[in-house]
Length: 132
Image (cartoon, rainbow, N blue to C red; front, side, top):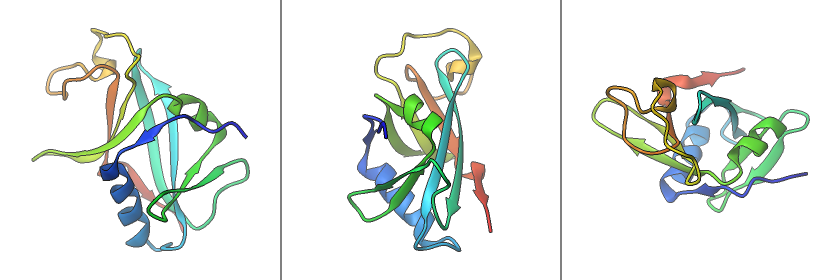
């Protein structure tokens, strides 16, 4: 199984652990589905689930939390830095591709009101879905 060479910051690790611990599946994991979106951005879905789905990688993180990654997400996450950022108006995971070229289109996250950064996208906390 091909595993992504990605970096999870301490803030991202803490976020993942807290999302799982305070969910209805505290022994489960956070399923992170990431797909390309825009010219240098990403579209993501997060859901705390009791078990990984067929084909998911079940990553045991340094802090004991579990991260479930489908195959298509493992390919997209390769080389990315996953962090958690919080501002007065929003909070969520951010995905930074240090090798991405700058883009002027609004889908890359460079539009008005977006946080600066090349190849950065944010997944707001409101993107979390509860699955029973």
